Amino acid sequence: MTKLDKACAKIRATRGLSVRVAEACGIERAAVYQWDQVPINRVHQVAEVIGMPVEQIRPDFFRKTKRRRA
Image 1 (tube, rainbow, N blue to C red):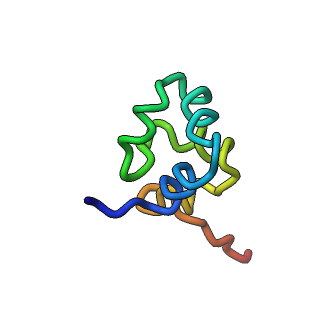
Image 2 (image 1 turned 90 degrees about the horizontal axis):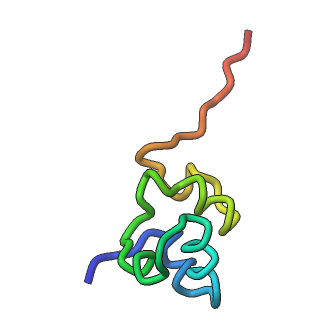
């Protein structure tokens, strides 16, 4: 068994969340359960539904940018 990332673990652990994520993404709930990590093309929809920043869902693609002082 592979290790789930935090977002997928939250989706599976929270009752009804997988249904809401699936509806937001326009896919079947069973497809959501196949994820070990959120696919990059679904990150923004998932972030909106679960209330987690994209940087936490997929830090390998999204990084917090530090503002430079002028």
